[in-house]
Image: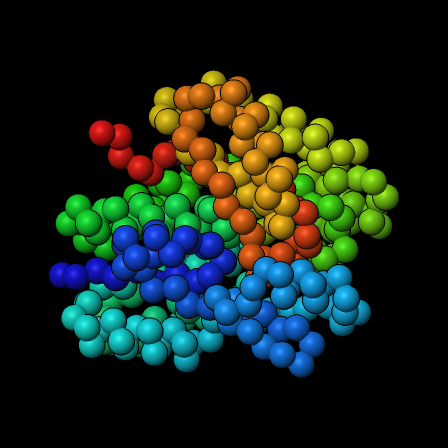
Length: 287
């Protein structure tokens, strides 16, 4: 009973990860003025240059059901009769609800839609665990509960340079918690249990925001009895990402550290220079 994995570009998987686990990645569309780009074909340089030089703000369009059907048909024709489809949080897009309705009438393969309730590394780790379990010979009915268990161990904290992008695109659920742009304030955000982005506080500097996240990570480590993988996330801020990683290496040598960069589809909403940490039970088996 061959099983395939489908996801979207908001997972920001590396080319090596995609190849290792044979993952089908469908591009979210990024719209810059009159031009539409599949995210996989839009360079970070082009995107951020547009942000700096154009008044018309970019937008995104989710993966279409036509793209989904084409991908599913191709996989079914290749002999896959199970497809685990892992996608961007339903709290910030209607895609997942549309996908679940589509899957009710799709008959060429059994589809298992999985709501990541997040984006970026949280979504990627679900794909990677699914890939590992498929490689071990597990079926979709065995894999999906494990993905949900992994998702339940996830903690997400991120700080944006300002709230203007999230406020404009409507992705911040409790926007009234933050008034205006708050000059020189770094709003702290997370995803709630239903995958919505919510503001939870504010700090004067990104360093203080990082210290807040470190305290949360320390508290988690004191509470859990399993190893953690921690991902440092940046939006066109690789130098600070490297600094955060070095600090984490020194302070938390027991955790596995990964770095990931947000691409255009998410940075449309969070803005440039966003920084964050995602941690959860380490999905990678130890030797």
